[in-house]
Length: 296
Image (cartoon, rainbow, N blue to C red):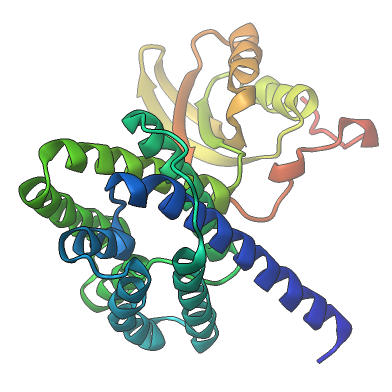
């Protein structure tokens, strides 16, 4: 094994260790002392522990076993091995940690418990590991029956929180749902990063001027494709270019100003973009490098 692979391995496991520490803080310092739950396997372990007084560390490992077995057939063996190490490490860390209760405010418990837990899960996933097996269940059912992973996890947690409302109380269930929402959002943020992209499609008679202005003033790459015929409040149009681009949401107002300056009647469609890869998007075109622009 060469030096670069060793350093990459050390970096991955170092970050997974950080994720385990953050997740255990969320559980041991916030959720466990106050009887709050999260979603997924962690939520099941917390619920059973609160009712049967069984060590949460043991339950985390026991309830994760079926999902790890599923993971063996649905994801790579490398991820399963990492996940086994991570889940056992999390269980041991929770068992030996001894935090004082930081706050008794229920809202703060839900928010910060979810924040620490979500950050830990997100960091682990970014480095090829899983701290909660419900994602593996989602992958399995997606491959087997075509259900979306999000739908599986949502249904899983609806059942869990309904049982929580019946067994413990509606109030605890509601605060646990808040914890789950915070955990899920922070996990997504850690995995996908802080950049938020939006796709834009522009139809305008002044497409040539708009195209040049977007490249020159906004520094964003774009794609154009031919529109054969269009019908709208400006009548029938033929033989025009449709502009398609993806930009950071921060720049959307600037793009609106550019388009309005050239054509106030331009037709604009905006939509969320979940993921982007390649191209010049993430670093936008460097306007200082004298990029060649199409002639109008």
